[in-house]
Image (cartoon, rainbow, N blue to C red):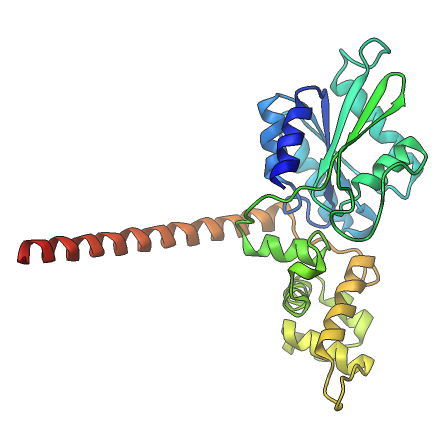
Length: 307
């Protein structure tokens, strides 16, 4: 990640426009703060693409487009690479953001950025109308930068997906894991499934009922949902015990593929509320640490005076 950031910083100097691809189901959680830092340092405009919009809640997506579009230097567009019309619209939106470029002598230089597995390479292939970037349903498929001419007036740079070194809010990490931005070897699927189930119980209980036929949804928690899936599907491990691991994997797969329905794990309002709670927790934690340090120093001084 450090090497990717360094390379991106070098390339940003010779870029006119940043296209940041985020996951429409968790637009803010899937925004990489390093991308924002790099582009603001170079004062580059940003076209923020909320990709996989076909998997996200339409009402939440509309709210996010409005939210991002109010930010300085940002134009937001909800899309899916499955629709050629959406892909065409990307270039139509990009060109006015750097009007001084876009001719053969000064081609528009576009850098495509984002976290792993949000669809950067798929977008690149769709824009070029041919397979030039490796695509896969796993994070970190793109390993190195690629620079390609879309036409004589436009250059595209595809970059490896970058995650930032420390994800501050635990809920962000869990949302990213649920949406497959984190490799399977870096998470415990059962914990992620329990988190996702809890979110869906709060936001979309009707989708759980429709898919799994639960009768007592009001009495369930995240663990109960995963257990219920194991029972409903007849998932059994050796010895006849309930196969909780298989149920968790199945649940995550059905969410990721859209089988459960169109789901958004955050809205601008829930994001603001979660951030407020997190900041208050950090304030209390800092106060406790400061108090503990003061007490420790007082004990040290007391011992020094006694000696």
